[in-house]
Image 1 (cartoon, rainbow, N blue to C red):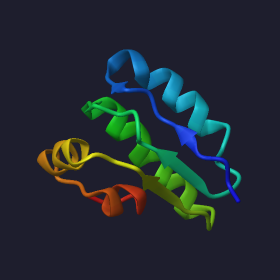
Image 2 (cartoon, one colour; image 1 turned 60 degrees about the horizontal axis):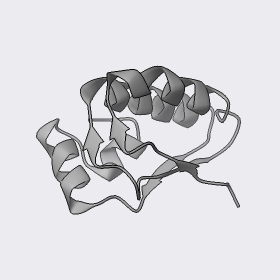
Image 3 (cartoon, helix red, strand yellow; image 1 turned 180 degrees about the vertical axis):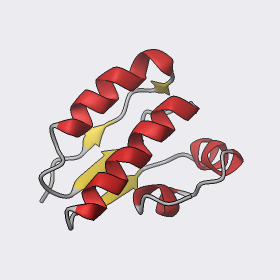
Image 4 (cartoon, helix red, strand yellow; image 1 turned 90 degrees about the horizontal axis):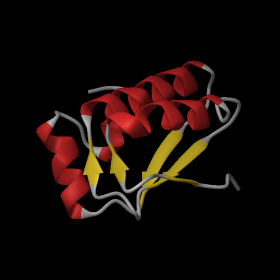
Length: 91
């Protein structure tokens, strides 16, 4: 089973580059993102996750998001996404 990538509590501008680097290292298999600590999702980190999901899907792999709070799901919805559409690489 894939070891989940535990996301930072604030997925804002400073978190984007480290998130991109962490995801780049996992593009050779399925990716599970653990959002249990996340309290805030910004647009740039959303784009990073969307890009990773698209890359994974093109390689025949999948991304999933787990343990998201209702607050985070609402933030995603405000940007036009659900956890499922984000994981599938589509908006």
